[in-house]
Length: 111
Image 1 (cartoon, rainbow, N blue to C red):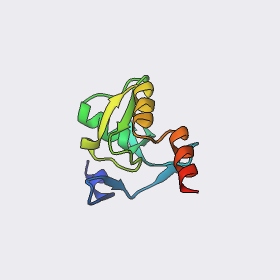
Image 2: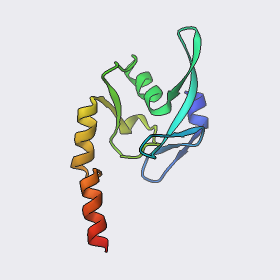
Image 3: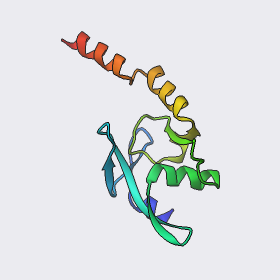
Image 4: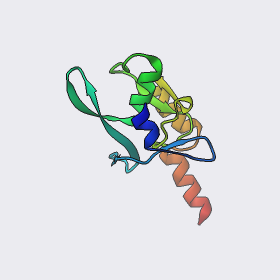
């Protein structure tokens, strides 16, 4: 927990922005990544998953993802994270207008 707190910048909206190592997803979004000691070996994990697993007191199942209620992938504020399925995560994206169709519509309006 101390390692995470030392690498976080608290933003005015309450997000805890990860300041440490970052990786880009296939879609180009950045996520925080850190090494953790797990089952006798060091593994690299996404920071928001580490935070949520610590809060839940258990690892996320293979069919679970850590959903960002704030829609900010670098956020690792426990209050902004909740477990769920990838289907629920995609439904969040559509509901909040972050899907490809919504982005195309916004781009067309801006022209």
